[in-house]
Length: 376
Length: 97
Image 1 (cartoon, chains in turn red, green):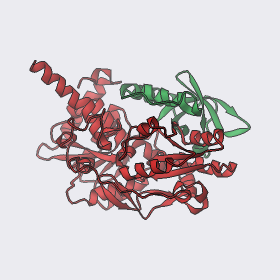
Image 2: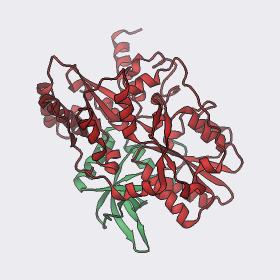
Image 3: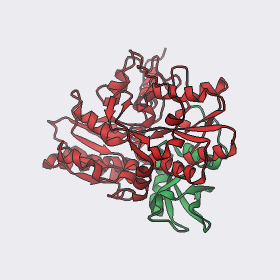
Image 4: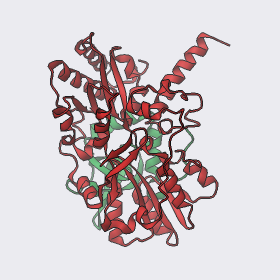
């Protein structure tokens, strides 16, 4: 609870936490999944777990784009960038993600032309600045990021930039939620819905979760109070035996989403029949590919893609952690072979990955307390 | 990468309707307005920015809240690094974690 004093309205936080205690049936165990990695990070960072009764368990979901990307896709991207005169451009988050032969940053150290960009439109700009080279933008992200890639491709086509392509790894959140709900070893009571993805897709795409699965969803903001209020919302529904979609993050998320963003995505992308997710396996219609009308800007159509498939190290249990079956510290490699400094699994790479969040906030705290309690 | 950074629109360009200059805690960068074309902001409006694109209009109060959230999450520095990197300015190696 160390951060409570920093919260904007500590007394409201305390009251909301009390309400959660009142609403939670002490004879029941609640498993609530926060879908978004941003929420996972916030939950650990703010120590929200300490504000909840022991019978409310927060399960960390698949909403971290770096974490769900199979290693084979990184290898594929890097293999294409091995070719002469290709520039590998990606967000900073991708740079430390390990491929079989090392991360993009390690490839850069070995001479590959690897550039960090903060926006897909800057990758396009890079192509303009390097007319003799081909710029491949390694695109990752959920529906939050996919519309920006789509608009960038529309601009590339409109301005006729031909030395630019996108290696599309965009994924969509709904099929991943469906796969988790279909998983036999998973039992969930409710969902905290992703905030920024929902600014694009709106709240309607979650309605089947309430209708068909009878589970409440609260689309949530990222402040401590937002997350606690979302927990109150789903607990109230569970207590009343209801299942609906509630929008806690109304100040940013419109119920219908962002129509311009959805149009851009529909113009440029179509659903892949299936796509591999790290830890979750192949999920049908869960990712985006570039339409034929943009084939010239599709890395996968312009280049020979090796189509590498890499199984995660046997000892690493990323899949179980990603599905919420195991807690990060229950993985055999956690804090031993696999740390944020030397990540083996992708959940340890991104600050939004549940393993990195757990390591940075829970593990370090425990390690410190232990070292104080038991001086060497 | 899922950072949403609040900024205030300080300049619009008549010849580039899909671009705006935004101010994020004193740092000015051009962002893309293509995702807000159904509801374009005007000068003085606040927007949430993600990977160089304004994603939604927000109130000034929510912008202040959002910046505080980023600070509390320890991500304010990453957000400023991102803003400063837009337009390939100051784009370089990420800081070690």
